[in-house]
Length: 319
Image (cartoon, rainbow, N blue to C red; front, side):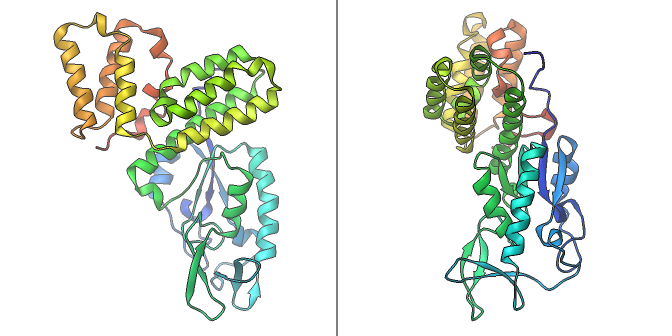
């Protein structure tokens, strides 16, 4: 394999109003500074707007989800837009597949784009439940492994870190499987992601290991589909302080014999300071990365865990 899949600029779908496009029913936008100015420096955005996409004007009357026997319907006054929004979604999902998107950021509370807790109103008026938006529901059904989040949830530091980690990991998977690969290449890819996966889900890491071990006996497309699914399921699990601590200690074991007593004590102290919540994860990671480079521990130099995302995004900085 000739290309380095770690050099990435993922392409992400996004509700266009979050980029500052005036697409909303009131003629305004919901520009998200973090998405545009910070994350936008490292990804390419592809704008979507289901409501404008089906031909609605800007401005326009607002849409709401209304409960029915068939499920929530998208109503604009007395007009049922559900079928038009679904037809748009089906067509745009083909676009998502062709573009090879590595993730999606949706507008919260939108009857078309809201990922989960969009208000559903009774036919008489008052809210009586929650559901995903019409477009968002079909997007999640069609691409269950695709990293998808709402901009509101990305204000949570842990959720934002996990989402960004997932989009760059998904992009590496796309790059890897886009090339002509053999089982030995998959072994190398899996090995590079060992500690990243262990920090999220040791159980699913072991499941992936069994899949990789049997890859020579399986159909390549089946291996690809199963590996991507389980890999991304693993990264959906939030990396806990306990699992991160175990991962850090495991990595430290590769060079502990080369450390002086005071260096070893300092590294142990920093890892424990992270475990009890006194310092952010970036502190022990930085120290371990220093020793990995100093002692040229090749196995660890290749590990995605040390730098799963661009360092300029300053993730892993929260306690």
